[in-house]
Length: 570
Image: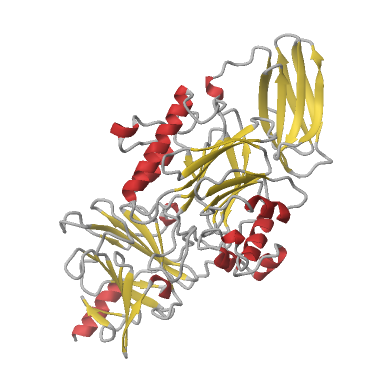
C-alpha cells in the first residue's frame, strides 16, 4: 500500500520536456525550460536550494540547480548529493526518502555509487559522462549526465532528489518520493555545425601538455590539427622549449614566413606577422605579451597577452597574479610605465590556460579590472580602451553542445572551461570562434580536413580554442576630434551586390587615398589617390569580380584616416 502511495505521488509530480542545452556556464538556453521545483528560502541554515529545472536532448539528461545561499563550487567545497531512481522502483537500489536510487553522486567529493542487484560499484565522473558548468563559484549550475551510461541505461523516466548535506540537509523537493521527470522522446537533433573555414585573421590558443609538439608520438596529431586550422597567430602554454618550435611550425607551412617569440617560462607566441616587441609582464612569469605588426589597414598593431595562471587549489596565487597583471596594464596605459611603447588604442587579446577553478572574482579581475587586493596593487582599472570591461568569449565545440576546453577521463575532475579568450570589443570584431574536439566530429568532416578522430584526445588534455577576427575601428574614436579635412560617410547600400557607393565630403582641397581591403588586410583595389577639390564626392566600387565577404573601405588624408566596413553578399 505504501509503495503504491509513493508511486501515485511520483506521477503527480511528473514533468517532461526536451531542449538543446549547451553546457557552457551561460543560462540563456534554459529560459524556455519550465521550473521543476521551487524550494522556499530559509528552510535550511547552510546550503539552501532555490530552484530545479530538468530537461533532456537525445544524449543527455540536464539539470539546472540554483541556491538561495552564498556562492560555492560545484566540484569542491560542498556536500551536495544527487539521487536518481532510474527504474522508478523504490524496492531496488539505495533507499532514500522514498526512492530506490541506482545513482548517488557526491559533487564535492567528485565520486558516486551505483547500486545494482549484486552490490555497489564506485563511480567517477567519466562513468556517467558528467558535464557541468561553470568551474568557478556561483549560485547556479548546469549539469549533464549521459542517458546511455550503464548507470541509467537510457530510462523512460527518472525520480530525482537533490540534497545539500548528506541525508540531513535541504532537499529538493522536500516531499518524499522526489520529482519524476518523464524523458521527452522528441528528437532534438545534433548541434548546428560550426564551420572550420577561416573567415578572418585566425588566432589559436593551445595548452600542449608539456612540450607535446616535440614528442614523436604526439607530433603527428598536432601537425594535423594545426595544419587544418591554418592559424595566423599561435599562443602556446606549457611549452617550455625555445629552440625547435619555430622551425617545426614553419615546416608545416612552407609557403609562409613565421616569426617565433621568446619562450617566457612555458609561454610562447608564434605569428605570421613580425613580432616587434615582447616581454614578461608579471613577477611569477605566468603572463607574457607580444606586440605584432600586422598588415591591417585600420590598426597596424596587435597586442597578444598569453597566460598560464596557477593550477588547482592555488586560489590565492591566481588572484595575486591577475591583480598584478591589472596593475601592470594600468601603469602601462596611464603612465607609459610598461615594457615597451604601446600605441594608444592597440587591439588586444588575452588568451591562455587560466585555470579558473575557484573564486569567480578572478574572472572579474581579468575582464573588468576589479583588483581584489587594492592595498598592494592599487585601484581598479577597466581594461578596454573605451573604459569598459574586455569581453570573455564563450565558444562551443564545432559539433557538440559542449564548451569545455580541458578533459581527462581518468581524473576525478569533470571537463571544464579552463582556456580563455578575452578581447577588446571596442576595436575587434569576432567573425567565427569554436573549440576543436575531433572526438565529436563526423567522419565526413574529419576526412575533409585530413584529421583523425583521436587527434585532439591524443595531442593534449586541453582542446585548442580558435577565433577569427578583424579590427573594426580605432577603439578610442569617441575621444578623437572629428577630422577637419574630410568626412567619410556610410557606404550604401550595405550589404551590397554588386555595387556600393562611397560618399566623401571634403572641407578643403586635400590629397585623398581611397582604398578597399579584404578582411586579412590585403589591398583589393585603389579607387582614388589624388588631390581633390573641396566639396561632396561620390565614389563607387563594383564587386562583381570578387567573392562574398567583409571588406574595409579606408580613406586617408595626411595623418587622418577613417574606415567603414562593407559586406558583399552574392
